[in-house]
Length: 278
Ligand code: DGL
Image 1: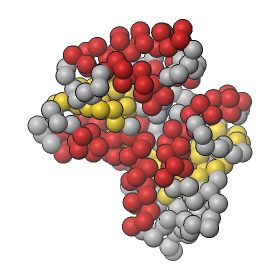
Image 2: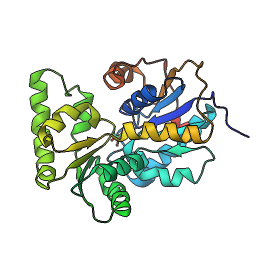
Image 3: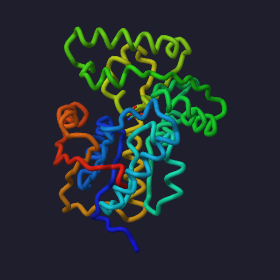
Image 4: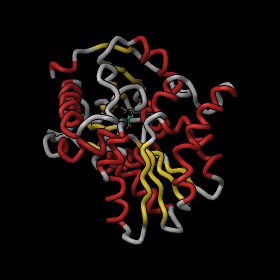
């Protein structure tokens, strides 16, 4: 049976960070309805094992299937790196992650063949960004660096354009993590985690103007658009785009931080579900 083009797109993440991907989808595809799931009871994924992240992702995909979605986007870099290959073999729905689009964009961007990747511990350890980039162009050297403190800093509001004293704290952490990557002489840096686009200005200032920052969320939104067009699954224009959010913990903290990630875009209802039942 052919999927319904007016059906929603399912997007999931370990928590609230995937809203940076929702924001890009809303910007590129304003007519699409979105069903978002944030695994707020089990976040973070970035320090968890492959098997655990696959198990969690499988449950979420089962939930999204009950919402009759026409396609799934794994907004979480860690779940894209650890679970996409397994999950895509198990379902009939089209599914994309953020790692492949991000890696591809970096390959197209670099001139000096030195690419940096910053992400969670689990994403860097998976080696997937490194593998995809060197498969596409073996002349590229990839410098991977886990930056585990960035996620809590962003969620606490220590982001670009926050008050000066907060930015000072984040800038110290940026210097601590990124000095090595800067010294490696990369001309392209992948922001390989949902939260990092909120530090883009400060990271950009530290790395210098000669370094291009790649945001996989933006590229993934373009890949999604292309994939929907090819399959005749883009929503008709008269359709009013809207979003429904589901979380696995009480909605409070999600609701409080959602605006930070969604920017100028509007939220929608937020409901808690028991994800381990799926
Ligand atoms: N969403 C995760 C990612 O993009 C970051 C937060 C976490 O560790 O769960 O890798």
